[in-house]
Length: 84
Image: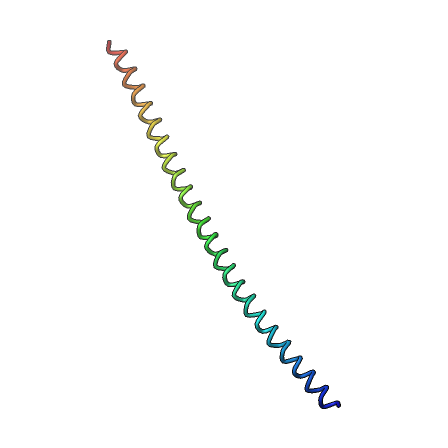
């Protein structure tokens, strides 16, 4: 009877190991997919921040050009008034 019990325990152990192996592989696949998703979101966030920074830089340059144009126009207007 002991040999039968040992064989039953071995059979149960092998089945448990196969189930555990299957579960681990399935979880590993989910983990890889989640890591790819996280990497994609990080890349998207990085690119978005880069685009926002570039747009902000262009906006600041446009504001500076507008201020310079206004200053030039004011100076020309003042000179024209002084000449008249």
